[in-house]
Length: 117
Image 1: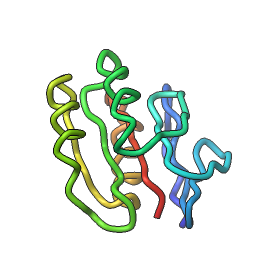
Image 2: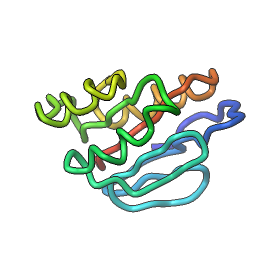
Image 3: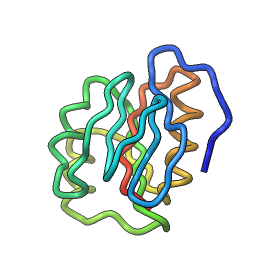
């Protein structure tokens, strides 16, 4: 799927996604990804909560793309992010990518962690 262009100043947009891939900032990446500002990093999924906690000084909220459908976050994962005082918004990956793009284009302090569809 391709997204419409939006203005971004200090963030990289999620341009599109497909089976086990994302197009972020015009480049293709495979597997789960983490995007914060201009940083694009591979993400180890729910077992990699440390990568998200490290962002706590840079963000107010993290949008979690849970895959093709919205699912509940694992309890330990959710509790670790809540303890770090990071707001969480889990949603299906397609919705998470679009939501992140809107918030980032508004200059919000947001990151997105995406599991593939």
